Length: 352
Image (cartoon, rainbow, N blue to C red; front, side, top):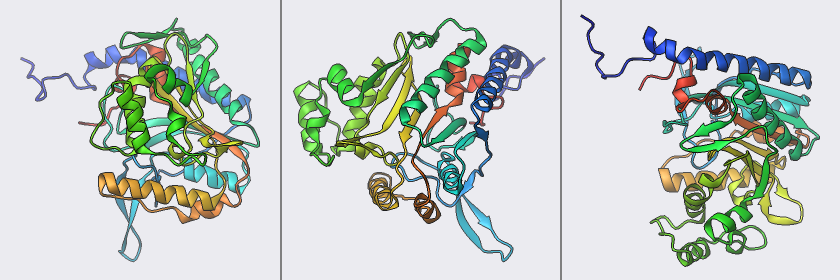
């Protein structure tokens, strides 16, 4: 007699469950190969930056896995598993590389759901001397490539559908807030992009939205984005959400002529965020100020902060103008294979 498993659920490694998952994993392998070929045909070097870093990134709401690196002298240094290979890749751009890509694991704590996993695969790539519009075109093309590789007719997730073969729509964050939430986002910032939480709260009240306890502008912005805007994106066709507020784009340069917004975009399909890209900020002084602001906010909300990578800031002084993007590879595979949970397309999910 077969004994029941302690959790009551058949584990991922059980032959019966693996047989169900295997077609999805084969689809993953095919997409992986297609992406690497696509990159090679466009003269990208696929590199392998280390996952162990002194700073995991300096964004308020990203949470890292911490560890220690013990030297030959027996002394321990605090280290982190990176949340993105961005810092290492930009150092390589500073060193002289012009087109690089990375397809590797990254780690983010406090994240587990149908579309989140604590260890996942990120496809990240950079182009030196090219506008971020080109990176947007890359991203849309790779999403389409994934669909063509598996032969899926359309993406479907939680009752929403998206045809990745159709031309993508492109909408600014300000226009999306106005259209889907009735909020005039730009009116809540001054000409230099300084946000005002009270003004945003007043706009939310005017359209009947409940105001959470945290009335900081950043928190309210995220609340409206998640509740009202994101569910409307990527329905029918891929959506490029463009020109984020500068205060929500710590690593992106500002749009020329309008300091309120930045060259940051995200890409959505079926309401699922797939990619986050920038026209990259290369001013080390402004980058330091942004990192410090982000870490103050992190300390206020979560009671912790991460060190700033001084080596990265030094490298920015040598880094040429560039554009880059990070794409959630597992999420794209999930949609392109018809899976409804991210762990269905992971070869070996992290134990819960």
